[in-house]
Amino acid sequence: MVDDADCAYTLDIVQEDYDGTRTVKFENFKARGDVALEAFYQYNYLPGTLYYDRLDSVSTVDDEERKRVEQQHALDVQLRKNRVAVDAIIECIQGGIDQKTVLITEAAARSGISKPKIRKALIEHTGPDKSKNQFWYEEIGVNNSHIYRLNYGVSDAI
Image (cartoon, rainbow, N blue to C red; front, side, top):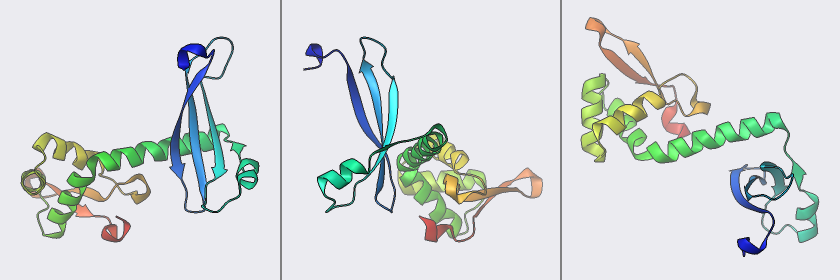
């Protein structure tokens, strides 16, 4: 069907908020003429919404909101990709295994994930901001050892 069209877009759900707002991204993959390469819209996706009410709820997303939604989407994708590693790392830290080398080895053994992937997840999720999926922070200990501590209440956020 795409061969018969002058213009074609893919549609991806970027974010679904708890208030029933869904943000979607249209991305152009076939263009003939002057058309937007991408566009973002939001609408009400709650079940039971009448068709015309849903249609009335469609609105364009401004650049600031688009950037925020794309950043959050990237964080969500990263967490989904690292979920098993993150869970193994948290389990180890909660169990008192907090020195970097031992932590990586034990998390890899518990999860079945390679040490390089555990190390990468450890780095990607280190920091103070749980809204950015940073679940632990790093301290430098005796003899330059790297010690990891969970951010306060991290187990509640996961």
